[in-house]
Image (cartoon, rainbow over all chains, first blue to last red):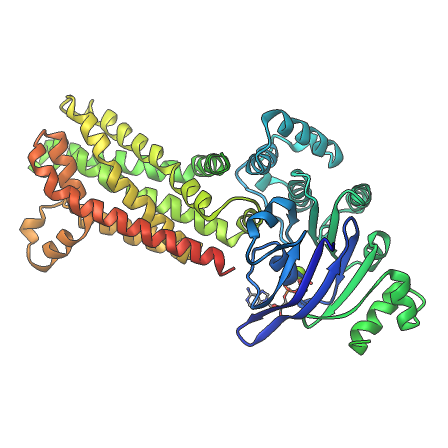
Length: 242
Length: 243
Ligand SMILES: Nc1ncnc2c1ncn2[C@@H]1O[C@H](COP(=O)(O)OP(=O)(O)OP(=O)(O)O)[C@@H](O)[C@H]1O
Ligand SMILES: [Mg+2]
């Protein structure tokens, strides 16, 4: 079974079609990157898959559960790091992490264990007691991503996770994402081609809400006859459907 | 349990905002102090501390509307609430989580008002307890109104509508500052259709032990509380769906 499957997924805002009859299949345990220029419909797709936005038409299935009719089941499986940093500003970093654990019904012991693990992975120890809203943008970002991971989701959505991170933090996050490979299915969006290339098992390119191409980095390079991945991406987007 | 986790977060968010505390607690207390000292110089029955305090506690509730509306509007404008929409929290977890924390805060505010009024000459008797319990239906009305405003307005609008308009409405139309009968006419009619004056009168009746007067006032308050809560729940769920 496909971990995620979208069937004719459509989202319209008035007369703008943000996502247009999207048919996508993502396998269990793979890291799938969704690439596309600004406004291509990546975030809108993620919002539908994570039950925030209702599709105008079509449906999507997460582990077989419909995002429109079985959102309760879907929400138990997923972790989301939204494109915009999403932390509770007046809570400390630790309280933010505890909040998510509490919502997922973790016991006190498990919560403490997870917080310890995550603060090691994200080197959050120094900021655990500080108010999240008072941290620098990059640090808020780390907290926001840690909040997505802390519930040990089977399916992880990372919408431009490395936006605003410094080089070191970015490489650390890459390592962390790699360490999750195989354990969780990951859907990632990014504007950094080297990031997509370094991390993805497969890549989907969308433009104006339509899926233009899907494949591994190598497949997309062969498809377009490009030498490097960035040129492959550019020619897919510029020439439209292949 | 999930709901309580979220409610805990909302409590922290509200209580950690110093402006909230300054206004919500400070303003009613300052009014109590001002008006009761005014009364010492220009005796007016209305500003007698035993009449004034129950009215002020009702006025103080309008800050509960402001608090809850501001918190919800802020949450809606940040990605934080969207993130929570992807978690197993249900619509009712959110609604209860936003509303519950404000109830003890409202009761706490009422208690503090009465305690503060004691050194100013308040008559101390068992009726204070009844007045404190009696404030609950009106507190629910104010809190639900906050949920409603927070679900349909943005942060700036909430500041204007709940911060300025509502606090004034509840002040003018509650008969705390002046006797509505003296103004009479249309103004009095409007005031009687709205719950504010009923809440103030009911609190005065409870505090002064005139329990037979309570029934005429509690009915409109209950109706308003139930009606506004229902509308607020619908509006919140609708905005949640309409992301
Ligand atoms: N709530 C909304 N109301 C109206 N239009 C919207 C809304 N959300 C998104 N859109 C529109 O849908 C289109 C797709 O937006 P989306 O955010 O999915 O793009 P994206 O691929 O994530 O872009 P970016 O790389 O800039 O994040 C855009 O044209 C955007 O203006
Ligand atoms: Mg986006």
